[in-house]
Image (cartoon, rainbow, N blue to C red):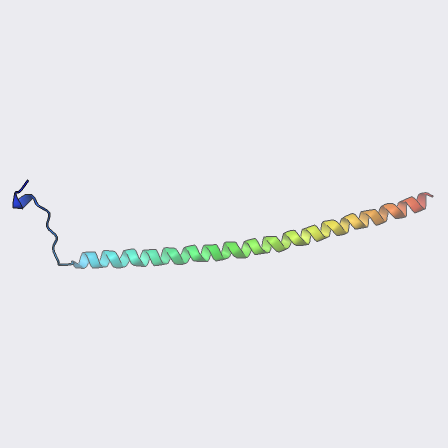
Length: 80
């Protein structure tokens, strides 16, 4: 175990390959983060559009209900 040939050794030099690999990984991470942010923005816009659509649908359903009530009153008066 005390054999100097078997011990771990860390060199202080950084090769060009390590620098290129770190640069590529950093660039890939930044691109991925940007794409993820864009997807989130698109989903938020779609969600807000669906929310307004739901509100409009609820208003239309209420208006249809009121129109049916009016129509029923008119039909009752005509039957009298």
